[in-house]
Length: 265
Image (cartoon, rainbow, N blue to C red; front, side, top):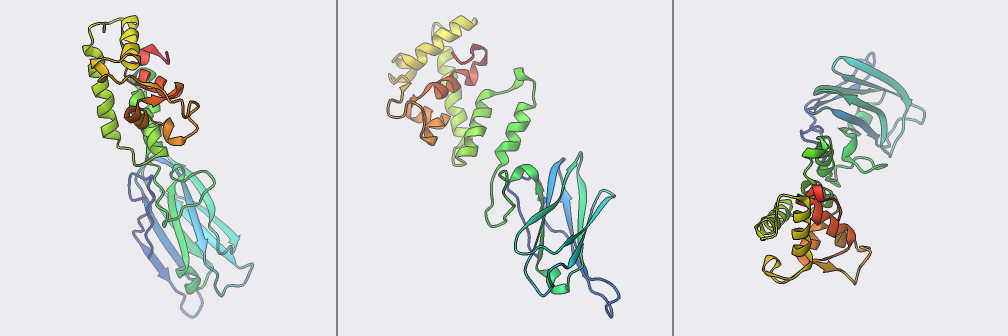
């Protein structure tokens, strides 16, 4: 059996825990194959099926029965080979067991059939699941969870880092967060820092634009080689922290990372 693993799933949603092939005795019972998936998180799931070309003639009717928590859906479709298709997209409110039964093919055709069940958000739009690619989109679900919080509770630095990791998974989130926290501590230690938004803004602007002990004599400045941020890596907060060169968007993202009440000043 072939095991699938989607990078976006918290649980082993594609772990095939049972495969049953029952063959007919004297041709009185149609062969079938059953895949069982444990969906460990609520969400919207896609069932993806692919059949390899075999001995079945064109127009062969194939039956697909999908059972989720006692709810059953069945479809009879013409055999479609050499390309994945999605017979079902289903939202579930809580963890459930899903069973996918395929019948109407020979034993050989069933053995060459592949079934995957994966979170609909674990793939790029318009793409099918491919176990060989190992797409990693875990950050998308993390961002969704962050943005579901009350606005006052959203940590803009963590959201920005999570978004950046979707662009460049090699970004070290912990190290980037530590750099931001260190900047915040330095700003709070500056003598002009105070409780009002005006005092925070003045201190933050001085830290960013004026050379001094607070920024080791290296203020942040505009990147005149790429002022519009056309180079993708130049859009990332980690790059800005490393080079201290950026554009309006990156400068604003640093300003609001720990002082969101100031806004994109």
